[in-house]
Each structure stands twice: as structure tokens, then as C-alpha cells.
Length: 114
Image (cartoon, rainbow, N blue to C red; front, side, top):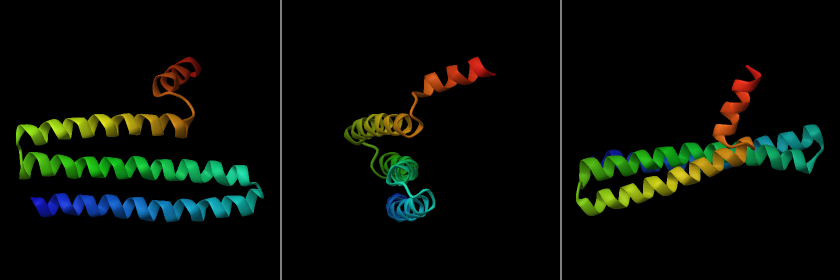
């Protein structure tokens, strides 16, 4: 199971690296098309933010596998809980930053317009 956890960690790292490269490619294309540095910045920020969210989720899966299947001690479970809380806060912050609106406000906005 340790190999499975390592596989998830490698996948998370690959997602982050590939996403960073892809985000830069998309930003360059947006800059050329719109001829605007501000537009390129917005595009790279949104694209890389999504990459970070996905990478964090995969890395949480690696931590879960490692803690539950490989070394399920109380200390490891507590550390996992702390890691999940931190990554959840980061994911929430990233999503709010990418979307430009808090998730509960987005739901209220949809409900009001629907």
C-alpha cells in the first residue's frame, strides 16, 4: 500500500508540474489573442488555481492511503487530520480566489437568478 500512496504523490506532483506548464501556455495564447497582460494574468491565475486544487486533492488521497492503510497510529491520524484541515482551507481559499465569490454567495446568487 505504500507504493499506492507513493503513486498518488507522484501523480499529484505530475499534475502540479503539467498544470503549471499548461497554465503558462494558455496565458501566452491569451496574451497574444487579447494583447493584454492583465488578461494573460487572469487566465494563468485561473488555470493554475484549478491545477492547484486538483493537485491538493490527489495529495490528500495519498495521505489518506498512507495513514489508513500503511501506518494507522493515533499520531498519524492526528497529523492527517491537521493536513486535511489545512488543505481544505487552502482549497476553499483558492476556489474563492478563482471564482471571485465565496461558495455560499455563489449558491445564493444562482438561487436569486433562477
